[in-house]
Amino acid sequence: MQLEMYCDPQTKETLELIEGNLVNPRSGRVYPIRDGIPLLLGETELSGDNLKYQQFYDKIAPFYNLSNKLYFYFKFGGERQYREQFLHELEIQDKSKVMEISVGTGDNLPYLPQGIDFFGLDISFGMLKACVRNLKKWKRDAHIVQANAEAVPFVDNSFDVVYHVGGINFFNDKDQAIREMIRIAKPGSKIMIVDETEKLASGTYERTPFVRRYYQKRTITLNAPVDHVPAEMQDISVKEICDGLLYCLTFRKP
Ligand SMILES: C[S@@+](CC[C@H](N)C(=O)[O-])C[C@H]1O[C@@H](n2cnc3c(N)ncnc32)[C@H](O)[C@@H]1O
Image 1 (tube, rainbow, N blue to C red):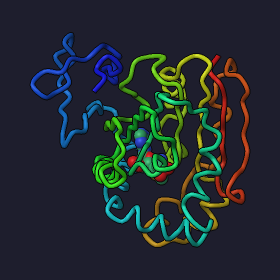
Image 2: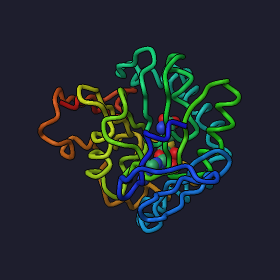
Image 3: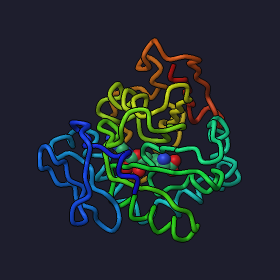
């Protein structure tokens, strides 16, 4: 664990490792580490869609990999064909510190180069437990934490690459999540945000058993959150990928 990179998700104060827990020495707040995963969610922050989707992903975590594999195979001819449509945007070099916000079960990692220092956070402990199993299977190392994308427990300017795939459409506070991605990225680094478009939601998810109740009657339109990117960011670009089923928003921190 690279303790100097971690911080209290709310106050951003440094943490210490005491008797197997992460502790904020100023407030005395204790963040346990369970099954090797630091639990860095604040107590008060889970409400609204963040809570709803944490519960949803905890429930579907055991079936997530298999159902995704089938879906990617029939829709794109395989998972690699799907993921490479956005992962090629990342500017990864040897030993880059890479952060995936909402890492889920870690399924982007097999398509990233060896030799990177990979970090992932997610709100769902169920997804992270599956991620840890996958990491063992793939023989890959990663630093995995349970946290909310809107309260990231890492210090400013820590990562060469920061990206997110597949959750932001339903975050409670997209502005805050994007501010956090920018805060932890090193100056000059490119940030990427990918999620589904209306086409995928209305064409597939609204008709898929179990998933459909999370999409029907939704009050928001699913668009790239380009209006939430601060004006001072550089090279802001949005495109549709995967036959218009996903958007890919990229920009650079000055
Ligand atoms: C569709 S999965 C994508 C997983 C992975 N990024 C991938 O590409 O396979 C969406 C993930 O977003 C996570 N998530 C949802 N809301 C979140 C939040 N507020 N903070 C962090 N993660 C969140 C879910 O738990 C889930 O693992």
